[in-house]
Image 1: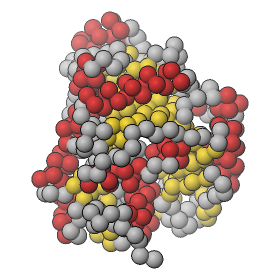
Image 2: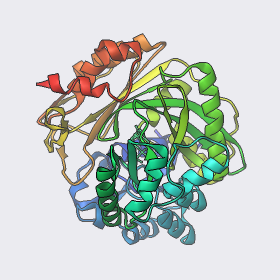
Image 3: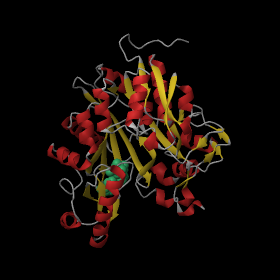
Length: 456
Ligand code: ADP
């Protein structure tokens, strides 16, 4: 069937600078909009779903991400060779790289994401904290700007009190974050964090924040067009994490009441306006046990967990990203989410071995289905889960008219799923969602700990 073009004036060809489930997700959006999708792939991904599914595909290098999915010259060349008008970077890889977005701009290729200035500002988390604080949005107490040496960190810690977190200013994905409980560990952590940040992110900038014990992670999805309209599409709660990385997410947050929700949504919009944000993005907050909220950072990209927001709003966020990048106005100003959506991330990791990656070949695969179940994945029977890339296998999303229905659907779906050949987080997620604490909505960050010792 020939797809019906959304409008006559739209990108004709989009290159997707990513792999895995998000590349597949973007290919689907392009197809529905009548846009030709172009996949890039590494040698290891020659037979991967995104390579097969895209209208066109082009090899950009060897398996190592640094020489393929992170190789800016290789990706720009691929876009030039295939005559792509725009690049969708997905999440991870080059998605929040202001230098890459700038090069796209110089090469007259649209970058489907925020403008370069907003990207640069959100990428420097220490500077961003300061700017957002100046706009009147509460931020976690901590250093003003970056910390240069341990003595400086000590002074801030004495002022705000222990425990504190040491974070890389240009870090992400839960990497480079440490929690220090006293002066001795702080001194050690600061020196180590500077060295590590330099090696991992090419910049040794670090900053410190008060560690808010028992804080929930609550984030707001925003959409901003290039004509000054900015809206929020509600929040997601993502407090259940391993290694500071999310495992189960849901919307709306069971930890917020209506007045807190309204206040935080307003703060999210204010923070985004302050940095002149455009396209899709997420404003992340911590919500303390006392109900106080604090801005922590922007995620200037489409996020892994965007699907739950789509399920309760009916808005296709990837389509909106493409429309906004083309210059179309949002065309609506309020979105009222309906029902509840919960996502479980299925990683090829062994929860009993401290979430050690479990690469291998998927010998037998069965994916769940049924009313209210959405599965975003790139895996197939016979697919080899490579140690080169992130170990995300699939996202199982359940939607229901209320939380009970969403939980029941998610639990049944997780029980139905089979990925023989690799160990995954499916069983753990299934146990968590059917547990009393999750059902009560008591989804604080310590919930996961209760499941780990008894996993044996
Ligand atoms: P990254 O960008 O690497 O994901 P974040 O700053 O978003 O790093 O932190 C990751 C997670 O760690 C957050 O989702 C939150 O749950 C937890 N966290 C971050 N900062 C603090 C803090 N100051 N106090 C308590 N928990 C925190």
